[in-house]
Length: 131
Image (tube, rainbow, N blue to C red; front, side):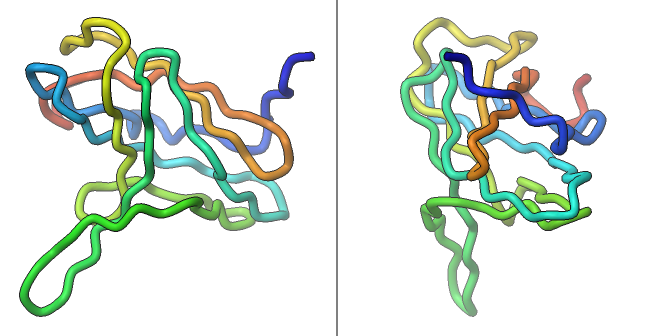
């Protein structure tokens, strides 16, 4: 049985991208998701047929340093959403299953706590300005 696709969560226009790095180095991905529903959703898992491992990280900064902290889920607020943006949250793409180069699209599946999924193609590029 196929997992149902959400109709409540949309990708904000031109917000999705994966920063390409050479030699199959781990790549950070960014995206803004808008939730049109009256209830909040948690993103509990992210997968991709193009990468072996995907994790969510938050950048935590104190007076002297910054570090990445792995998080298990993020919440899309009701009638709001969630943004993975540089310096705050990002999606870490590791161990590509195929050669990934700028101009490709990473296929990504977001799993929501209500049992639905959001399927997205995230452009791979060297800079957020390149579209």
